[in-house]
Every structure is written in structure tokens, then in C-alpha cells.
Length: 369
Length: 124
Image (cartoon, rainbow over all chains, first blue to last red; front, top):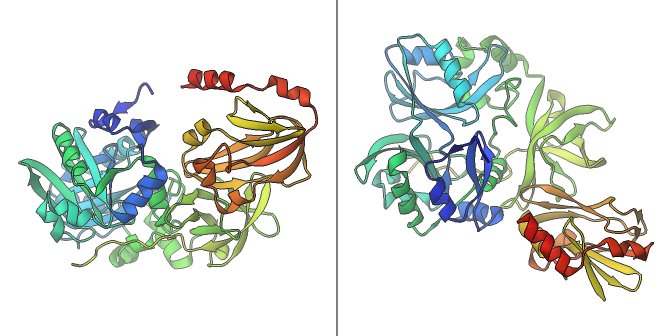
């Protein structure tokens, strides 16, 4: 694994017994001694800790930045209050998605972005190329990002950071821990209640040790991070979202607020608004095999009963909490109704499947206290 | 009774002209938690090296190859309901299938236990 970026916490993960694999140009912990299934279950039942420092942490500041940023994402930003987070996408002229991201408003013209690790440099080039020069973009390359996820995350983290107890889903606060500045955001990508904590690299080890000592927690690698997000129907950029996939095809209409659906005025709005009004050619759906046990892996081909190619699985595997196969993929609009029967081609054999809700395990966000 | 091994991390227990096939302790450790096993149908013939079964962990799917030429006589149906047996008891209750040998001479090309242990030491 040469030529890869090292996480600030790599020596710490090695001490925890992590196995590493390359991902997004980083040497990332893929699993720990507990194993993917155990790490997954522990996150659903107690607290999982994830090092997601490969993700890009960016700030955008300066007069006019709110209006300028709105031209690049379909989320309504002007309505957001300080400390509010929205999920959105960097859209392209063709209606496709350059990346999906979390956008936090800190002040009138002060924004925090968290983008995917594999996309961050392309994202920054896109932002710099499309935002006026008067707007300042800062990349926090020396900051770690640690996610604390699970039903006991709230109570556990509040012992270290009392502010955690007050935050509801998609709210964030800038505070201090042990006199180190931290950004504490109530969000994540496991479908569970939880937080993402941003901290300078040189304090990251102290935080990792304190989180480990919480007792309820275990470290979780990218293997279980994938099964956790997949079970709860969350999209992975590069698999389920691409430059050729529109937010409407991806069933992300919920992330485009009313004003933006009416007025547009963001990259790709012509195509995206047309799809909102007239329907998209294809749609992201869940797919489940009738046998209830054969996993459908990424890129499994989907056919109709006549044997015509109609789409493919974009993310699939086994869901330990669902205790069965979990998969999402794209099918033509007229085959996207729940219960529609399709054929998946698995190792040359036709496996009967049906369209289902891509949320196999219910999300358990804390939206009110 | 003789037990032999392949470089694909299968074990083969030979009793008369019947071979029982499974994956080794080392193989299940590398795979991680097994969640699905696809087994061959009985009375089908298989050539040495043919893909006859599939084992899937949370992480990925892996093929299982026929370690010798012969006819599949039985599959371990219990693995359909309890794939975790492959992790819990890989070299006994977690067996995959049985074959009737077509050419016992093929067994000579398989590894004995000492050779297999040396082989995995090289892989590590």
C-alpha cells in the first residue's frame, strides 16, 4: 500500500488491531478484530467509532457566499438557521452529481462542507471554478473526522461533550473539548443517532483514546460502515450516485426544498426540474431476491421477464441486522413500483427478485428531544 | 482415512472412493463471517478445478472449486440454514459437499497437512 495518504490516527488504529485497505487514496481501517458482522451489530446496539478523516472538510466564507453556493447545490440554503445541516449534492450541467455532501450554516455567509474523500479535490476545483473570487474557500487538510454512531452514542458522548445531549439530527455546534476546538455535528451515515466530530490532527489521538474509554464503544472499519449505510438505504457516491445520475433518478427529491423545485437556478436545474415535473427515465429502488438469502453484489445485471437488460445493482451485499440480502439499483421508471418482479443474473443463473423499499432497516435519527 | 488440502484452501477427507470437501480454518478466518453458501446439486459431475459452490461473507463472494474430478453425491443442506457453521466448525460440521472420485490418482497432486501448513506460512 504505497503512494497512499496516511490517516493521522493510523498508528492508533494499528494498535487496535485494524486491517487496512486502500480507499479514496488513503490507507483506511477496513475492519478490526471484532469483524465486520460484530462491528455492524455493535453499532446498531451500542456505539460504533469510525475514522472518516479521508473525507474533505471545507469552509466557504465571504459576502454573497450563500447565494453563490446555492447555484451549485439544489438545497435551499437561505432558509437555514446557524448550526443547521442539510444533505445535498454538487450538481452538474447535465443534471448529474459531482458529489454528495453535508452543508452546515455557521453564519449568514459562513458555510462548512463535508464531501467524499475520493471526490474532494475535484469538488474543490469545481467550487473554485464556479464561486466568485471574493469568496474564500479553505480546505482543512490537517483535521481528523471521527464518527460516533449508535443508540447509546448520545448518552456516552455527552459524558465528554455535554453539548451532544442538546443536539438533534442535522444540527451542529462549534465548541471545545479539553480546551481543543471541535465541531460537533449530529449526523452520520449509519442510519443511527450519532455524531461526527472534527478536530485538529494533533489532538485526534487524545479524542480517539477518550472515545475508546467510553466503554460502550468499539472501533468500526469501512466494511461495516458499508453494510450499515446500505441497510438503511443511504447512497454511496461512485456506486449509487455518479456524474450520470440525477438526484431525481436517485430518489433524492426530498433533499431539494420547495423554493428550489419551483425556481431552479442551480447547475443542471433545467434537467432536474423537468424530471421533477415529468418523471425521470429511471429510478433507484431496493431489490430483494424471492429466496430471501442470495446476496446481490455490486454490478449484478437486472432483466425483465422477457430477458431484456433493464438495469443493474449499484450496491449490494448482506445486511447483518436485516439478516438477509440488501441491495439497491436502478430500473426504468415503469418498473420501479414496489413488488415489480425482475430477474437478477447471479453467476449465470436467473434469480427471481422484486422491487422493494431500499430502506431495509429503519433509520433511527433523533429529530426532537 | 486421509485428509488432503488444496492451494485454494479446501480440505478433502477421503474414505474409500468418497471425498468430503470443505474449506480450511485459515480460509474461513480470511473470509470473515460467512452469510451464504451456494451448494452443488447431487448427481452432477464435476471436473477438477470446476466452480461448483460459492461461499459469501459479509465482505465478498468466493468460488469453491472441485478439488478432484468426480460426481457430486451429497451437499451439506444444513449450510443453507446455518452458513455460520463454516466459521464455527469449518473442518467438520461445516463441510460443503461429497464427491465420488473418478480418478484416485489425482489425490497424489494434493497437499498433505504439513505441506499445506507450510503453504499458508508462505502466504502470511
